[in-house]
Length: 462
Image (cartoon, rainbow, N blue to C red; front, side):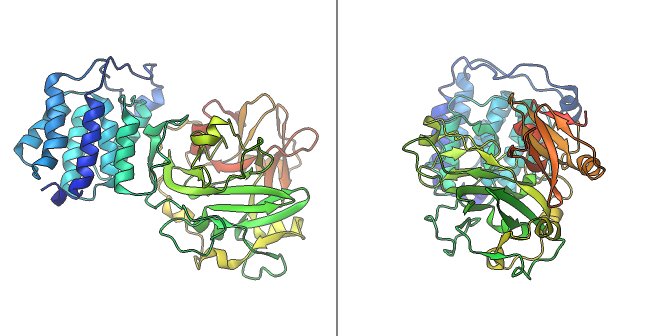
């Protein structure tokens, strides 16, 4: 029985139906990127497998029918299905690896995972039958930049929305690479605005959180990590203990509306202004979708279900993408509470209740051995988890400053500049300003995240 392998029949049927519709429609498919791979990618992942550029053969169409449709209609998984998967694997078409990867993300049956991993191994010409086969396969597909098959979004949408409800408005066409999107293991936060106290099986955003003065914040230790934001002379600290369990805050500071996402996986808190938008655009209420893209959270607007690129602030799908909405960033300073309140004695800080009893910070042990979700290849100039301060120059050039070296230089009184960007100490952390001292919307992040979302970034020191 299909259900006995760990996936309900209705789920496999929906997946198979759409997969067949899309796979049978392959026509003259060309690779998205045939450019040579960098040496460091080949060293880590091996050579990219050949990518067919033609339609599926009749035998392969039949194999897809048997493996993904007959297994459901016959309520059985037997020799015919195994033979069909063997035919699919023998096609050596690595494009189909993306569909297998998406299925594997949700499959809990070890037997079915092993079957899919074997087929994936045949497709890419490399053994994927390893612990966390889904992650290993996805890493290779990303690093090799294997193109998605035509109709891929429909296949993926069916898989994801059939298994977990709430994403039907998320999986739509747009300026987003759906190959790189995976499930983060939690459900979408689609609670109404300002319902902070409503329970959910999600990562619960905090809307309009209550704050207290620095003197009242006796629950915080001086060495607790906080994310400091200053807008129009008003400062506020967002403790990491809170942000790790909330990952999103919709707030107002200094007379400006803000959406503040924190991605624990990429070590990055950012602040976006969610006001002063084009006429007719309602303030976006940012929420966590439960999805990841290269181990970075995928956020969306609760009002329109428009997806935003969390790292860049661009709307990439939905009505807000149609209106070319791009959110302006405010700087976020990562520091400790003692130094932040010393330099900003009038700061406010969120109440302890928003930490939901989580104590202490858990981020640093969870991914101590490297990212726990697939990220693909990473620019080798720095270790993946090196902290950097990222900013964008007036010409649009992204630049990353290695935080450890920048702190030493700034504390020694040295000037750090790149184009119009200047770094300055603030509350024990670092922010970027221009030559006139105007804020440039900088933030701290792990190198793998900054470099992947800004692949042309400059690096200081070079």
